[in-house]
Length: 483
Image (cartoon, rainbow, N blue to C red; front, top):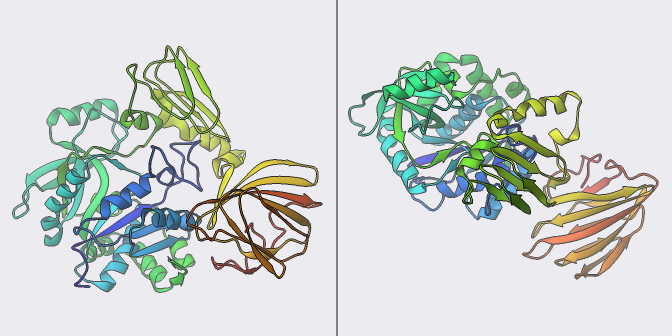
């Protein structure tokens, strides 16, 4: 498409949510949670691509389980997007990038793709844009460009890239002579001593068709399965849903392993734009604002004689005394306490939870839905109390329950309620009763969030007591899931 901007972003939004547990989990990985005072890392990534003629609207690749949360966060930014592609299962980054390149190349054989993970932090967007412009001539020449970060120390948590001779016709770009896996500490020190190694940022720039040529050479079975997944894809509301069977058959690999470490066309742009992959609680502490004692805090936190620690509260007061180099994270579901130097090992706790299995590894007390979210506040014999938050302009499905009645009390905003053949509005501090077996619907007709307290009563209160008759999100046949 000749009217598109020169670079087509591919935003990768996968992940299992293990490294920043308990704040993140499988259904809400780190890029989709709000780590700072403003927006999520995913939304910050979208903004780096928006508002500049350098980039076209992005192609977003996400897991099917995250689709409505991703769509809502895109809506909140007010930025355009090209497509939201749904993976039926996670298969690492190479298949995700391959699918994106197939879609882009079908529109424009010369399309240039900029692959960016959505869970990275970049402080200097202008420097980031400058690095992309530096790499663009090399990408157009057919090189597969990776962005290397100037090391801030002998970190063992990153892969490394050895910078080779400069490329002709592409100022500021070098050939890659070696990719190194996450090294031992002594190896990382040796890398830094040469002055030739950079951290591997996991961001890439190349012509979509050129990447597909290399993937065909090194992973033909993977590319064939990706082609079949795209060929069998179907539109679903705002999403493009890949065909499940061929995509599930893929043996997943990262882009580095599938192509970059094998190709003879790898090139690197040395860059420094305030990058962090926020790969652990310690990494988040490093990029956070700190007090004079080196402590970073968020939420209701009280510290006494503490140093160089990260303390995060999502609700309850967290008080710490006499701790040094610690990570303390409180959520409604769990509390994590670990020395800062062990924060990379949080995944071992997650593995224990998965083996038991425990709810805390997959969901949180607040559960996302396409229309907003809900949270169970209290439950007992024959009753349950829930807090519902309905996003502006959204509505739950038209539905009925066979075994329970419901009371709705509006505590913030204005609700439009349908009960049987009546439709009416409820203001704050007004309520309505939904008898058992009665068709009903709850809608937010305003531009502000709607908060409702729902009191359920009956002999059975399970989430599968629902029959849908109409739904904005294509779930009419999914009659055994909450609205």
